[in-house]
Length: 289
Image (cartoon, rainbow, N blue to C red):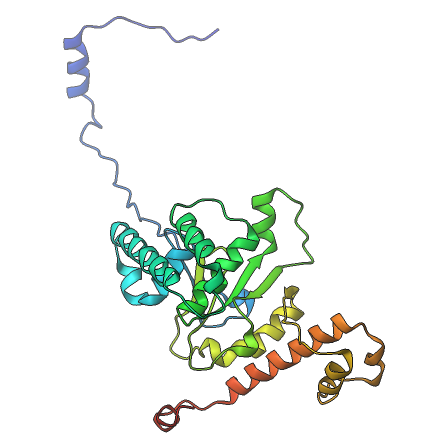
């Protein structure tokens, strides 16, 4: 049992005790509270994009991405209300452009594209096939070229499927990269338009300069790249493939589909390698190089 005894005292007695307390003048020293700044590491070094960071789009979505790349400096400092207005204006403009398209490869898809833009604006669910159709069309309409990354971890977490740690994801081109131009903007972005890669260091090379080497690094790191397939008969494809140093006489026994993908890859890498060798200067710009 405890030996503590309790005694009832009056309020005046408590005040008297407090006034006669020899330690009543002592104070606790204040504790300095140092605010902790939460740092979000958005660097893309882990996927081989040294000097780049992912700019997280807020709100996210394909229309937000295209609104952002129209004027990245302005978009990044805009309030959410202004961003929503920019997205609304862009959606209307794109629908008008689609409705007026004539004699283009996209003309026959006008109604579908109009509806898909509306669905994207309203955040409606769009399946992968239609989503790519929309991305492909908007990239062509706006003269932009996209390398899209579909992370296996992100996709698995959203679908609830088991994550395959040996497969990092897919890399998809917004259109046939063999038809791309060095003089058009090339972007690396998340497939579902959650982020877009932007250079944050002065010495960071442009996407056009690093595309070939970066794609090779990505493929070796576990990313599956959807290379374009070359057209032609098997004999025609073999004739072209045999001009590359990677060709082996034993490759003739491979199926046409595999050889068509190999040729498409070789042609794409050749294009991006040519880009890396280009020298940007005022003389080049004047001559249209």
